[in-house]
Length: 137
Image 1 (tube, one colour):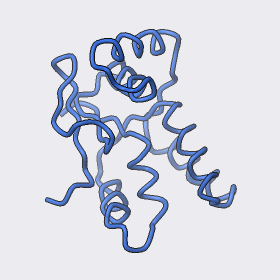
Image 2: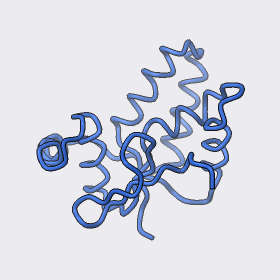
Image 3: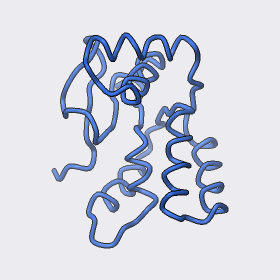
Image 4: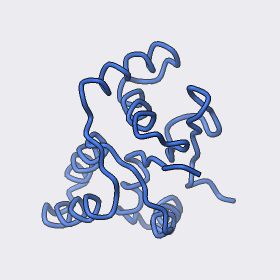
């Protein structure tokens, strides 16, 4: 398998640890795998904004963001990414934000996008497969 891209929701579940929500435990366990995931600056920004809305202390968010930057391959969202996102949106009908995630994953050469948001098993551009790692085996 080539590189795997992580969507924001996987990080959110892993770090929120909501009691009684099995997705949180699954996400936390999933991120302990030895894989080196790819993220985009969009994912890091969405993660930060969501954690702020959840009233997580800023110092905890900052520490988590530093860990993301240190352990994952974080790619910038460029002008070409933004243009590609519009093409993805037009071809597949995803939301603009999901289209930007897909465009980032494609630009990074990923063959898997781990997400909860897009149809499990769907393949775009003949090479990027969506997988929900939070589903029970």
